[in-house]
Amino acid sequence: MSFKKRYFGDKAFYKMTLTVAVPIMIQNGITNFVGLLDNIMVGRIGTEQMSGIAIVNQLLLVFNLAIFGAISGVGIFGAQFFGCGDHKGVRQTFRFKLYICAGIVLLGILALLIGGEQLIMLYLHGEDNRAALQVTLEYGKQYLWVMLIGLAPFTVEEVYASTLRECGETRVPMMAGAVAVLLNLALNYLLIFGKLGFPVLGVVGAAIATVISRYVQMVIVIAWTHTHAVRMPFIVGAFGKVPIPGQLTVNIVKKGTPLLCNEILWAAGIAVQNQCYSLRGLEAVAAQNISSTISNLFNVVFMAMGSCIAIIVGQLLGAGKMKEAQDTDRKLIVFSVLSCFVLGGLLVVLAPLFPQFYNTSDQVKELAVWLLRIAACCMPLYAFVHASYFTLRSGGKTIITFFFDSVYLWCVNIPLAYVLSRFTGLPMAPLYLCCQLIDIIKCIIGFILVKKGVWLNNIVSTSSASQKE
Image: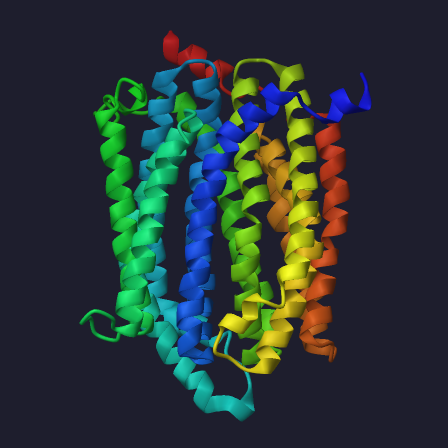
């Protein structure tokens, strides 16, 4: 096989890939773009408000990724059930998602109600700036209490949208997301700054806008799913009293629990890593917030390609097409990495422009530019790691992904960040660079695992057969 045929697809391949990936990119792109505009709006008020929201969003990321982990663990089965035409299996995975996510919502709200203030305080450092730190804490608390109301609709929408994507329907979640983020943007303008007769609510207004938009997004996805039962047969009888088969439950728990633990530990690990960065002061928190918000806008390509791998490769594995799955996966990884070389170069050039929109100090702006350029140069690295993770996950290798992702973070990245932040005087930018480049080792591990084909598994053949008997 020639080099071109081995690593690059034909027009039909890329058309199929983009059909799945583009709606996800658009949805994530709109979400991140509006998130950027939201961030800029709050950043126009002041550094303390922006930092308070950034800290709370870091805590909420742990909840969001716990939901993502639970859904993804079950979704491995959903994609493969759909690939082999087992709609009953898809229905059972949908119900399982609802049950486990309801438990996560209750635990998440309880944890943040009890310990929210103490968690925010972990990110506030600097003895010479106590007044600013106290103001940041108050803004963070105000934002958090309102955002708790939006956890339930966010979760329900994610359960429905993920199942639709596993069944090949990526446009509806995209459209719902687009409507929600545009509504969020409009409400932010009205409620943060008090336009058109609305009160000036600042960070509380930003939280209210987000919560309202989440309810709207949830209603759109639910309404479409239940009015298109012919196209989405899994929803018929989804809320009946028929129990989920015991063997399927055991299989999901076996494969899904490591993935759930992985996402929770990964999110918590990122929170701990950012807490290490916060030791460099409130300026580091603000600059990291600006950098991550803008980077996320450019990261939509490799993030969407990960979802694309999970869907396309997962369906091929479920259909028993192992050679085609391996060939498709290799080409998708190459496409993702090469795309990020282009986007990373673009971000390097544009990096100095974005921080100028924020009403913050020149020191924060300069640091944000450095962090953006580091993230831009590492983007192909992120793309390969992300694609490797989703490749392993598509074949149900959740124990391996657990070690590959969160265990690596806690055993390598966090100890490095902890030591460098507490026992050296290394400035924020080189500290951040060191903690990103250590993922080169992770790339090597991912390359070996993907090339060996340890992920080439059909994990639903037994479950599917048992349900048909």
